[in-house]
Image (cartoon, rainbow, N blue to C red; front, side, top):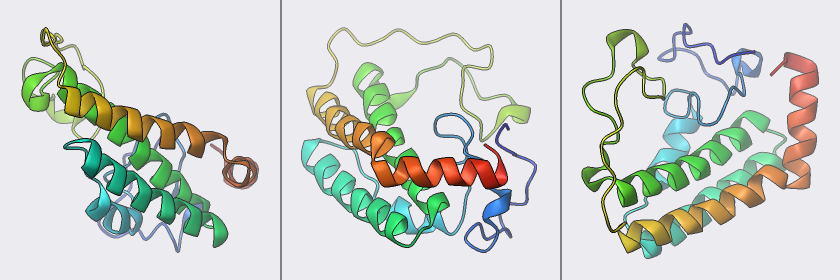
Length: 164
């Protein structure tokens, strides 16, 4: 099932209502789903390798705590933040200032990822090595999260109960 962007994300508590959560694709909903966004976002940094290391370790700790509490939505949100650390660090490595597409996001596509018909801006000739290192750090943690046996088990149980 696709991620439901029609929900009132200002009022829904996904810890109380996990049935409303959708795994979706990639990072969908990562900056919307509360209370997890509020719990994880303060730890999310990708400026350089040192920041990415501290950040990914903190988020990994939350990931494991959510799994231990049988809170799949929290674990999936932590996984999404690890993924977003990778993708954003790569974007900033490849595009000075982090702007990947030309022009503003169309009004009806706000909060959703993608080009939405906009052209990709040229990549920098020499990727920022600090951001490349940060992306690698987040990438390793993201890869580990996706195959973590308890995460896989809880994801399968969540999908069986609520759908994807």
